[in-house]
Image (cartoon, rainbow, N blue to C red; front, top):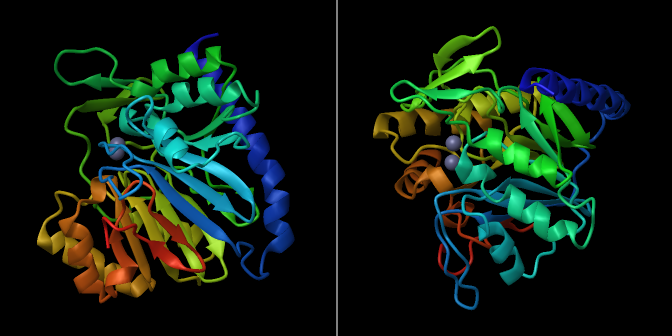
Length: 334
Ligand SMILES: [Zn+2]
Ligand SMILES: [Zn+2]
């Protein structure tokens, strides 16, 4: 089957799932936010090394998501075995997880997928057997100089399918479970992130454009405390992502927490000040920034937004955000 027809089939499956989930959206529209228990635990990020739990740090991201007793894996780390080993050290089982969300195609988020599927399928054939991505995750990436295929996920998908894995492509937002959303591709009214310097992306119709990672998507949780947003690498821009989350899920809700990679490591002080002012308007109460957020930008935003120390923390492997107790930073990131 050609890549084009294959992708169309996955998109069709995604549309069918979206249609099925729409029934659920209608059922609780206007009701109380459905999510009452939520925990997000970082399994891959740059910082690691807590006393009693050494873990493995890397340039990458991956997190375990737990909502009202159901689990998902969001991104899979960079090196093949980082998330596998870190989850084992934390005594976290991935056996019952069927669905994986990949925020975008880059290898520092998709690198562990095949190893994780191979390992956990031995215990449960359905473990990690479905991957959700945004439209564009399988589009070819080319270097402006030198040629070759730069989309890491194209070859990873082939290996994953050989292990029985299924890839579902989403054109738009979808509610996977009551109050648990994928944004799908994110609207970008603010020019927050420049395109990747490495090359271009090939849109349908063989249209070559600068690669702004069009598939980038986040998870959004519609909780009793407000919206919680989990981002992988923030290529769509943090404020674009949060405004899109509000518009999609619950326009009147404040942003209770932001967790994950926010792509601010090289942001200027002016850009961080602008971002912080926007975060104040959005009502942000917790910032758990890992991976490409950088360290100094978390503390800069803490100052601008006026968050207490315990509510703006650099994420480490094993650190978590919990809807009831806030951020557990571990010793290393206190
Ligand atoms: Zn990336
Ligand atoms: Zn990344």
